[in-house]
Image: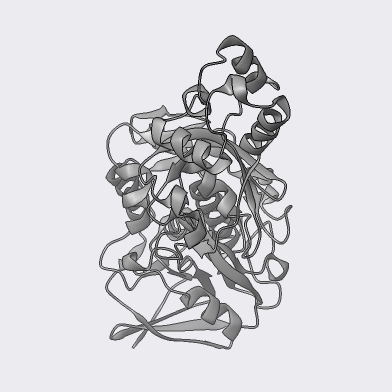
Length: 392
């Protein structure tokens, strides 16, 4: 027997739960289906277990997409303040950490519990541990065979995310399903991911665990946050941010001393002529030693030519690395690329040429910066689709 619903949401992550309870509370009979054994797994591990659930500075220019304007509509109609109001309604204490990033004071489990409570209020049916076996479309209805059951509805929502963090069960299912119904997919690649360095950068790979504030650049993208050296290469917030913009074969630039004025090294030479470059660098000791070794400026500053010190300053302000890859989807927080926005309505998230089919969250070619932006896209796109399904 095939059970009838008004909408079937594939995926019990942030975007799927948001979409389901929005439509459910507006009177629609909604079913969520997920192959995982628990909802909101990505929410639970985010923000060190405290869930960086939104960002006060959310705007469309903080997102990557083949269409940079696509996110404006959903984000403009459901913003950070709207989700904060929901969090406050459930009396979840929160705080701003840095750069507009909001976290739970307690646990990310509170956010999942909140979303499930809202689903319960909308009488949403949730079926977990229920892999999708087949999806068909006939006579204006989608039929989803899942587990040992089947359900049908005039609306189907793809909310199964991207392939990042496969240990949580992430797959490319969303893309396969989208292609089956004629939607294009922008090539997916890991984003917000550590970069790896080649063997000739072993000097830096040996600095594993050293972190320092930097300005990192990839193309025109620039981020001022911390960089962290790992045994495989580079990580830390600044590097994760530029990784979303980096392409194989390209260089990234790192300003190791963004707060130093021009000519600071010449000034150090005059003030402390007997100091070495290593001791003059206001950096962690191991990093200062590695940089001094790479620059090969031996001996006291007072013995160095001004031109050599000026060149060293320039190098420190734009140190070039050419990564040989990333740590892949296994370590990527999100995915760049996904279901093409050219095939979706920016207002409703509905497929232009397949009425009743929607795509939301990470499954779509919209990827936010680090710091709560991707969750805000999940909430906003899920809300937009849920409202559209309910006809409001």
